[in-house]
Length: 172
Image (cartoon, rainbow, N blue to C red; front, side, top):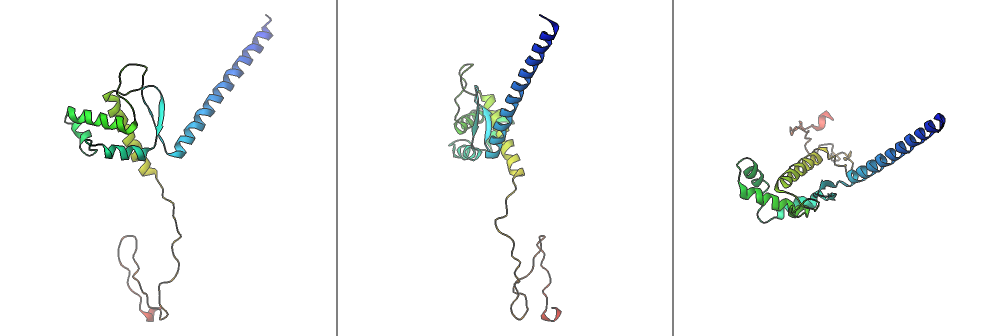
């Protein structure tokens, strides 16, 4: 095979690899952007990546009959309470609809993975709270609150909560 043919095949091969790589990256970017826009939380169930509604998970965690978000993680991780650890793992499995780990290659989470999933999920929720920017639903009113006589009908309050001095009709 002449050297020019080998070089041509090498260039063609590199172009095919580059096109495939770009196609895969484009798909990942599109998938990630769509998930982020929807506000879904992504996690691995032991076999595949799944997406869940974080509000639904929070509701399920709160509805668990034994799990207390304010007590069980501390008891399990800092105090070494095994009952709290198992309760926490059960609550996570129910909230995320995953089964306990049974064997490799099948869906299911170990107790450690449940603890890790809860920690990452709570970090995600906390970051979502901090990055949330509510939209203004109505423009602030620019109408005067004065009566026909010119006297103010309400007190002006600033953001700090202090009350501004009332204006007398003679200063208007």
